Length: 351
Image (cartoon, rainbow, N blue to C red; front, side, top):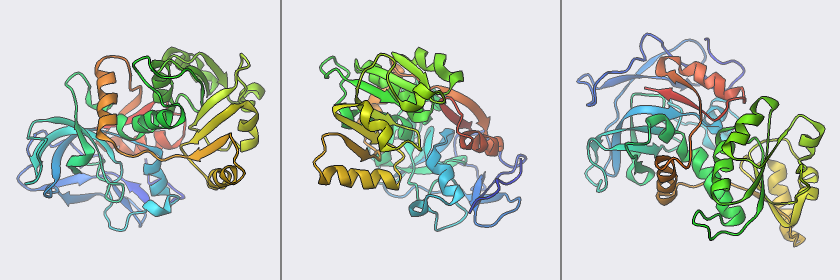
């Protein structure tokens, strides 16, 4: 597969060079092959020094990484605030691996610990064999949670959990309030977690997805599933006539005029991919004291939230659905799969 076209930055790989080193400790030559985002186009492979952990960082031997839409939006040049300033830039931030080195200030991790981490978006690092992660952005991974399942959680899982918490104050101990929730793009990375978590929180879930994924989303637990390409699905109406107390909006291109008639009196739309209209409507609804709200939403890393998700996966209550797995040497294929927008669950690169 050649470089991805029509983008501000290009993604490159080298099939013969991007091999797993095959050992836990960093190799003696201190260099590793990586997948590189470059401002120049053309086939290119780079070897970069294996990073050394700073005072409050851990060095990880990566086992798996998970692609999120923001990763390739950076590559396409459409996420300007997050554009890399230094090259080579190694994309992808959600990773699972083993600690092979610790900085002098690290207190909670030691060599040999299995972990999940999210990397700073400005530096990236997930499409590589080794990466350094901040101790504060790293949590331990139970042995019952495989690397791909753990790698899928940080951005997508936290977004699903925190958006449901923001919308309805979701609880998993039976003390939460009952609510009707709509999840759009329910078969995707965030959506498939949101459906499962909503059902664990005893919520009624209506979901939208493509026709081929209807049975899949039903198996996740959704009470009602509609094909978004049909007239009924495009209108977002509940088949049973329910009004939504909250919408976890994981899709794009749906206006307020579609949401508004489907919301309950105090209904709220949590937009996880906010556009200009989201921010405009957010301000407007505040100015006119509207009880119905649309909220632009960005997740934040909270170790306790990721620990909760990890425990739910360990207990078999939450599942990371893996659409497909690729070796690091085929990372461009994984990239293309994620970009086409039709992955069911998460796209994983194994190292």
